[in-house]
Image (tube, rainbow, N blue to C red):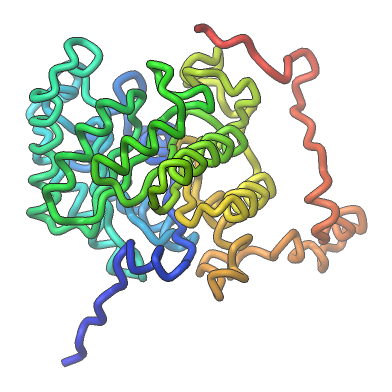
Length: 367
């Protein structure tokens, strides 16, 4: 009988200087596919339509992702009760199903499973530490039962709540990552990114960074500020980034949820694969080694990250079998003007037209 080879853990990979490619955004991708209801963005599709969640995981894996995050965003009974549209399905059922799906797909490649918790409804309403921690622990208990490889506290607008979540996750004995959905201006209370990073590390996180709310340019800037804060405090942690797949040059404090296009008209802001290659390189040059995406990231975006960082990783993802680097597959096209686009220079210097002559390039956020 062949023995199962034990995979390197997340900290083993990062400690060795390896690039870890994260996966992309699930709730928005599945909303567009008809499996998630916008508004509360709850993940009951893990129970109702597991085949849809499984397929998206599989596409991210094929694109080069090293991590399969459980589809457990806002997956607490408290959030499900508030949304009111999920009946006869509990948070535990969703969390268990999501873990099983993520593990099944992760075992098809060299990927790890990350159990993810997110901000709670009760923090803003009453800031009750014990209540927040109880919600996080209830979700974490499922992750421990399902033996995920590591844990992520993600999509927290307030560092205080994120610190409480990290303190709970740390009791699991598993590696803990923490990402805030903040801008360079800091968290919603104005705590600077550097201080946020220090607080998360002191709470027990070994990996810190940002996710969602803003585009790669803003996110890289924010993580750089976090890195500076850690260095000033003589603290060490691995850096992580999973930004939006949409351009947000406004770089506003509350992020894309305040833009007039959110959530149903963001397509005009979508980043292309060449934008993603630029992002991957900038993140790597900033010292970030866990590089992925959040809302707006589709599998081809993740493939672009993996292709850009292939020299550092030493290999291309399976999905690159159907993709020519920098448009090289166009070299054999019979139309000469398309054939001429089979170069890096063409795509790297292209200024894409939006096709919307009366539309502005930026918006005024509602905040």
